[in-house]
Length: 327
Ligand code: PCA
Image 1 (cartoon, rainbow, N blue to C red):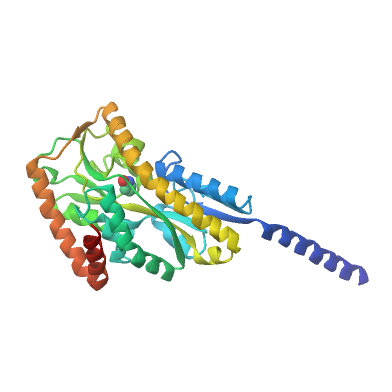
Image 2: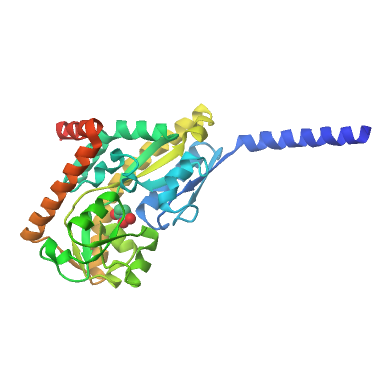
């Protein structure tokens, strides 16, 4: 009997010792959806290194690239429920949850990175509030390059897009698909090459970067640089995980996040130029839209913006007003 008590105490002492050692180092999983060579992924990797250095290894973040831990549409919820402490997801994909997530997917609202950043500043308070309600802290948000149209055949007007198997990634791109008479099909970026190779889709709107990352020139021949919008990824951390950190570690995370945001926006612009060159090298024709295509797309855009504004109500209007005032 005595011996058993001794054993239990020894185990207890040992496990307390172990717990103290474990508490000295916090480990987070960081779920992301894009390949390790993608510019967002590289930026995230640098963030992880910066946090590691600033906390002297006290906070170890493991990034999981290429949707290896969770698929992109699951990542936000994974952070929300604590299944991953950190995650990166594509904001406009979540527009059905709240219109606030979709503001940077509205056609022709911004025509430069500078304007896209202003729109982000106008969106940010509502975005932070929304994510906070969902148990998350917004760490940083980085823009993809402007979105253009990839096709197999040349297009001169929206009528030429009719019947296309149109890959979509958000409620707005699905709505655009309907308005142009295409057949919308949701495909995640991680499955894009396969969907094109197998003919599930044969046209889409995305960035030069995603075109280059996925070698879209292997299946598609034209890129219309219409610069329709500049959407963003968001990187968030579970509020619970963040609050469990000591003050110095919290500060290190926020400082590294601010640096990641600035670096990411700069890199996005450089990657756009590099990716356009890669597409060209791969044999893709880089085109500017014809006057007709531009006018047709502008009309589709107007419908989409109006529908969004109706749904987004006062909060949406406040974002657009703040943006217009800051322009
Ligand atoms: N690439 C991602 C999101 C936006 C972009 O440029 C995609 O196509 O899914």
